[in-house]
Image (cartoon, rainbow, N blue to C red; front, side):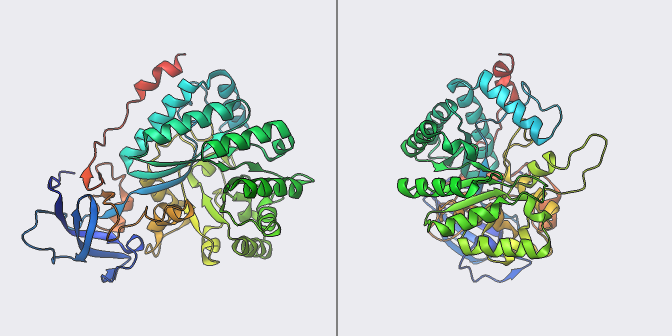
Length: 434
């Protein structure tokens, strides 16, 4: 895209097309969830959102000619600690068990502080160039990796604080909670580094007891919770219901996010509705990772996959449950592809989960909804007084937006265009070659 942005401290972006879903409080007329507006930017913030063609004539400006303008993205479920290890540790089977084994082998052999730092930084440079301003990562947290990764993360959060707001959740199997020495140390590390408690739930005879420990520990330490839940096509697995009941049983007042929840889509209608009702009652938030789950699930040699691997997004949303979509893994054994590009995530989610017809509110799932779930309400929206953290696209309509990768987008931070050059994969060669 050839577009010269004004260099002055106050300017207008004329004739912009805005998704109304991310412009709260706007009274502009809309068609198909899109409105036409002039944006006034002053000192790096949105000064005014005006009807198209009404910006003052004496202000420096650029005519966007109906180009779409979005807020920067919120990517609320990623794994930047394990990103970009595919070239040295691929997953030969492409399935979940193969991914677990491959990551375990690579973590034990290679995850020094320097290795994790290099790959985290590479991942964040990609996300930043694509237009992400808020990101939560899960960190593999079995000992001793939890200390290495959280210390690296804390340094990266400080280093990147003016570009991407970062959060981190500890990822560990729920059965490890009974190892008192390990779990106490993990909680200490999470608290010291401003993280969240996470974990992976799976059916256990005493799952309720372990969940009670998790919720009590989080409450005692003022921590929120973000869990990996039911990442399977096995209809007999439904720990989501147990999590919702545990939150209610313990009177937990913190935020609880559940990711994946794939097996919910394998339940009969009555069981699914009862579970969704309990999720709503408990106040859980749900994030779906459609690209990664389609890659891993229902994979059998020589057979075409028959399941999409996504949760019941429409039903959850209709029930009033906050729902978002995110990147998940990037170029590692859990997902061989991806670049932390939320445009790709949005485009694929729309197609995979039928988030269209209409598309009026769809933009929320990668912007304001995940920002709200992550409790950063100033992110993921365009409104007067907020920072001018914007992404400008050549596309003028939903069809144009979703038909191309939008690789020529312009990313603005604090009212200024950024350098969008992506890091070269060759930078990672030293890690691959050992």
